[in-house]
Amino acid sequence: MALDLDKLKSGITDAMLVVKKDNLPDSDLAEMMATAIVDYASDAEITIAIPLIQTVPPVPPAGVLGTPDLSTAAAKLSPAAADAGKGALQGAILASLKAMDIAFAIATTGIVAYTATLAAWTDSATITAAGAAVIAVPPIFVPALAIGMAGGETEDVGSAMATIIHASFLATIFTGPGLNTAPPSAGPIVSTLL
Image 1 (cartoon, rainbow, N blue to C red):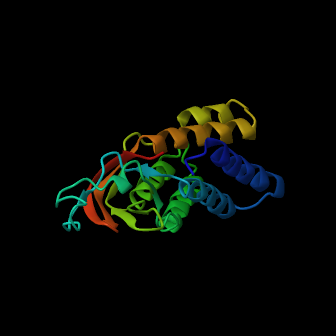
Image 2 (tube, rainbow, N blue to C red):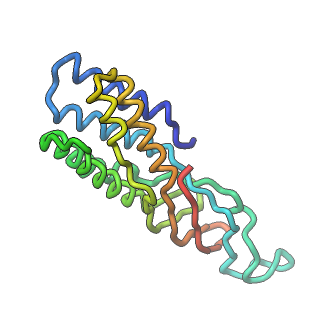
């Protein structure tokens, strides 16, 4: 899979429409928005651009210690625990709503903190990675909020918010060591989220 803007737009817009239609409390909107972001992030991928290096000498004539493990070249890894930071993300969104934070700045810090929880990655077979996911361009929601303040439709606000979040996730960089258990190999991984 990969990050899907349409999935995020649908999740955020649906949350906003349901809360508006059913006159639900801010806590429900925060929970639904956090769920939409986590569901979206669950589809993220990182790519191993440079093959990991074998750490155990393979049986001759297969190669020598330090030989690139070509089975890892261009491998895609997914988050091992995308929901780990959901509670904190939900709390930040709720804090923005309760504070009537016009710039949604508290939610921005929550999203930045949430991306940092995307620290463990796996191909669900033999390759894993652990490191830091750093959001290079934090989401700035002022353009989306301007749409709402100008009387724009809920769908337009939700779509703009999703587009802003999506751009921030695409600008997130993961760095950390990768490990393949079969054959044993290791090396650095640097990748943007896909």
